[in-house]
Image (cartoon, rainbow, N blue to C red; front, side, top):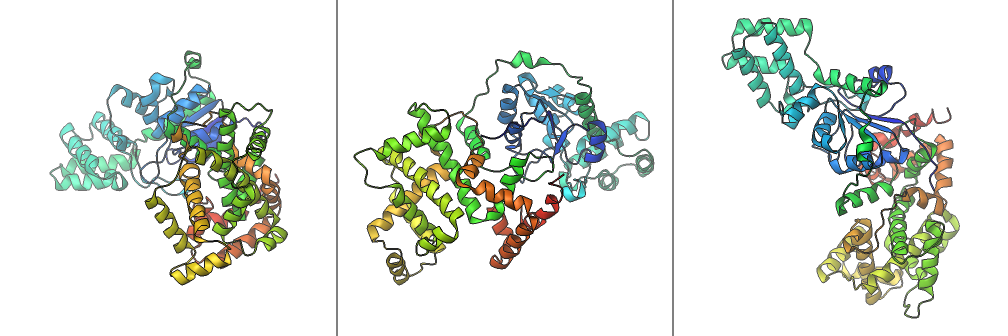
Length: 514
């Protein structure tokens, strides 16, 4: 099992406040980029006592779900939000135990502001410290209110500028651009000139930054009501889509590298450089999770998940209605991956990949037995789609090429159709994470299945060796660059954000020994 690792405070931070400024206020926290869907469930592995949400992604990626915040609250975590995405979620979940901090969250709660775009900004990437490139509407709103109170402009002209700014797309929103357009729409030139001078002298009122600072100071001073006892019996409803999200997280490494991550997380991230072996190990994690659910469903008693699954394997192997074996599925897997003709070479020269395939085949066979008992057979249309995709992937464009492939892989048409059918079930129910829809063997047990798959197969040791020898990673990078013309796409199949992320990793490893 994964080692216990506790991180007291986790903060999700981006354009609202620089990490350097945040660390001056709250140096003991562990900082992460803006929160996105799945991140709250992911950091629960670290057993935090406090999660602070300031910034969050949306639009191009799914925003953080309300349900995952509720799961954190259910686990006794203080979830505190303010400034940006944190203010939005806190205003929506304040009645469920999330703590709201700052004027923006307060304005959302009392209805002074309602739109998500009030806090939305276009910003730079992590390398630029998420530098804001546009003005948040809430900052423009409060800057105009301040100028109005100082009698720099009157309400009529303030309203014209405000409405102009509101009509701008958030990725183009800028107070000076709004003033320029407002002048064309009839705003007084003398007052707007005075406003520009005022803003240049005093600066735009940065309410988002003020609230971000307040969130951190509140956490640093422990200046929030300890009302988690009010929610100690709170149970978050966990529908199928939330359980699927949780399984996806449990079957993968952490989303990206941070130097403060525990060693096991770093090793899991390093395993991505093992390429196809990593992808197969990731899929194996899904099989482990579902086999464990099957063992729980059958009430198998044992000290560990592996013992439960082994008992299940033994029971299945003793059944009298067996027409296939795990070895049959190992051969199917090799045919699917293109390794069948070189299977003896694979076993002798790439023992790591072979070991992963061997484990994969056992658990696949076990779940297939259950699927077939349930009568789960793909439709003819589905089989045709999977067969066509297989032929395209393996460049079997003509009947002649298909016939030769069958000969080379020692299969007849019936065996080929069985392989396609088994692969369709594997993909639909396990790899696409739809097994929960069967309402059969599911479990709420929160286990980091990817780590278990690493350790079960020996991939853990191989990844740890990579972690300790960055020169080996550099060799794998250069090989991947040579073998894959589209390195961007290849990197994404290994859960990197792209080519740059894939090639940048040894820079992070320089501090791993510290």
